[in-house]
Image (cartoon, rainbow, N blue to C red):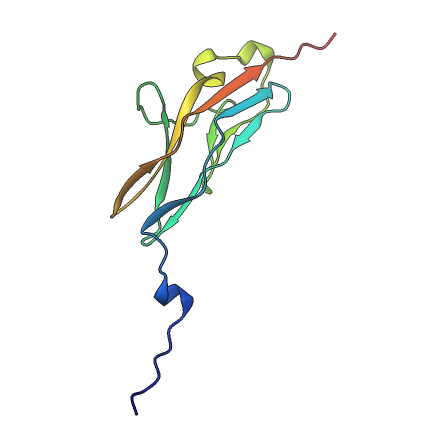
Length: 121
C-alpha cells in the first residue's frame, strides 16, 4: 500500500511570491492638528521591501523631520504640524507604495493626501 501523503494547506496552496497585505486608500484627508498615517504592507517569499514614491515623478520619498516619516512597517506618516509648516509638495500631493523582492515589483494605487489647516480662534 502506498504511503499516505500529508500536505499542509500552505504546501498545497502557497502564497503568491509578492502581494499587498494592506494597500493604501485612494484619498487621505486630514488636518494639520491631527496628522495622518497612510498604511501599506506587503508579503511574499522572500519578504518584500516597501518603499514610497511620488506618484507624479516616481522620485523616492524621503523623511522630512516634523513633516513626513517612513515607518518600518511600511506606513507613511504625516505628524501634526504648525500652519506655517504647510507644504503643498508634502501635504497636497499623490504618493504610491511599492513592494519589491527578487520576484519583482508591485505598485499600489495612487493615494492623494490632502491636509487642511485648522486655525485656533
